[in-house]
Image (cartoon, rainbow, N blue to C red; front, top):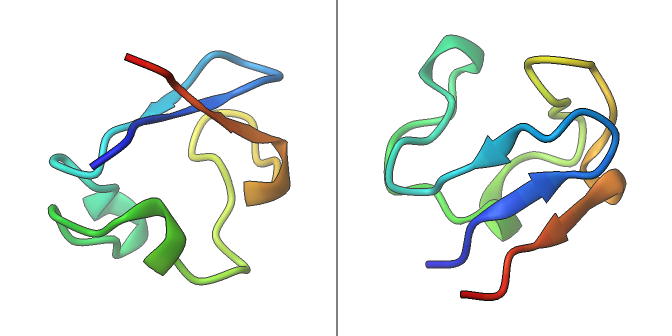
Length: 54
């Protein structure tokens, strides 16, 4: 699964880790995160994340 970068603050969403503090279980693809989820660091929405090409 692809990782996603928060453009404003640099937080990386890693689907293998998820975001347990926000209720996103490990193994959750970015596309499957609810649309109202926000970056746990700076609070921006999913629309300000970019896919990380590896």
